[in-house]
Image 1 (cartoon, rainbow, N blue to C red):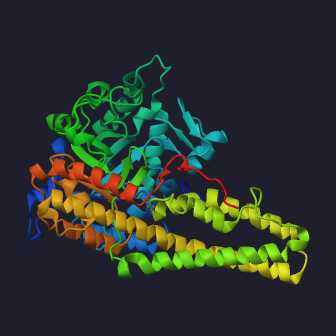
Image 2 (cartoon, rainbow, N blue to C red):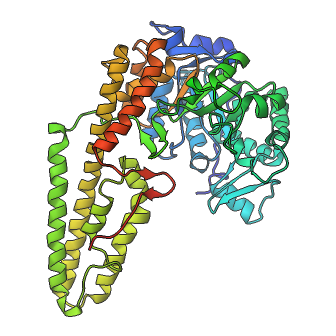
Image 3 (spheres, helix red, strand yellow):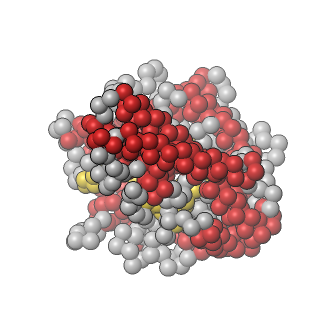
Length: 523
């Protein structure tokens, strides 16, 4: 799909979010609690919902995603966060279509909805255009085969125009620079501030022209220790060259809580500084927490607990794994004339599964690594047997092996989901003891209310791709926020509980970068 040329067709929506209109968006709420449901967005003058709709995995063509965003906007969410590179522009396109439908139907006003987008990455078609020489940008930093980064004004200007067309709007409420820390390099003599000055000058000009109303940064490096060469200081690196910036976005959750409690970060305590500058603060990744040893940990459990605490699902996984081993014995018999044995060149599928069995903390991690790692090892065995197969019995046995392996993989996913659920139940129970006010709230709600319980962040961005999930999370806002005295005990209890739960489960864990800790085929 040519996403940049297959753009939103029709008249672009005029106007932008205004203080009066965003305030009116919440005036129909019967339980209009300023701290729970909405808040003033720093010095922007806008009134914004405490949770915002994150669109990282929103995809064009998905009715489910379309309906989820529509439901959110009709349920009291007036903040939408997207980016030019999300889905190669698809997320912006979906946002534009949903917004236009609701505005045309007079369900919402354009001026009530705060649209945020981000620029900085070259991915998908933008990267192909650049590498093919169809378009040229200055100061592009290559990071991988599929991703590059650029914040030069020529790139920002070109991508900004495309963002407006995909969103179907004449102007944007907030434009953020994505991860400016990626411009840093230890061997550079030029400071990060000097590199960013042209970008902020461009944003300031857009603001002066009335094409955006506010700007800022979205950064993963704002809470890193000053000793980290990739750390970014809001007070030292950014604000001196962007004094009119009004918005800042960063990761924050129960585990990544330095923004609230630590004074060891670059530039000091982030929350206190944000408050002193009257910045609108938004946090992302409320449920995907970066653990110091384990990579990303998902701070949610299954909505519906598995029957009998998941014991039957775990037993079914073991049964199917044993059945797979039986078929592997039949394979050796069927291919005896070919002197086949499972070995490093053709590992036994059951051995692969047993090696990786407890390596994945979440189903999401399982899906991420299965095609490139586990499936690749399976394919080695399948290829060997396909070459060796000569008669009907051998082909039939090979088909049985594939069938049993697929069945074991399907049950393996349920096994991982159950184990993760049981670990997160332990975390939920520990948090309930640390924060008695949240004793009746499920883990996802605890994680969300922990963030909403402080002065920073103002808005928590959540990926909500299903209507049911939108209703669950917006419903959590009806709960009282935890008192300030419960916040630090919650953070401490969460990290301790996760460490204990993982040790009790004897889990190696996976890294977002390297995958499972080790793999030695069992033969």
